[in-house]
Length: 120
Image (tube, rainbow, N blue to C red):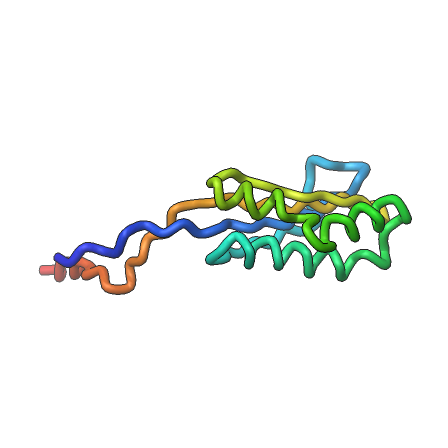
């Protein structure tokens, strides 16, 4: 049996939206995997920018600082070090959290799978 390739670091991204009055039950959750720290943080930055006009002035300022030049550099650096990172905002009665965690992804594209035994 051929072995799969070496494990690669990938980045698990989650966006969870909560109602601010009930932070225990998410309203919406989305997840994806990205290949690089830059891709993962870029996805969050795009999402945050899309929300900026719905935010209160203080949160809008925080969002613009984080999505602006160098604002998310610490998050990219944390992912390169193998550490998780995140960002959160509140607006329109919602609390939104973005998190990114490194994980090991295995390339199994060339892995030979065992055939199932045929029934007698």
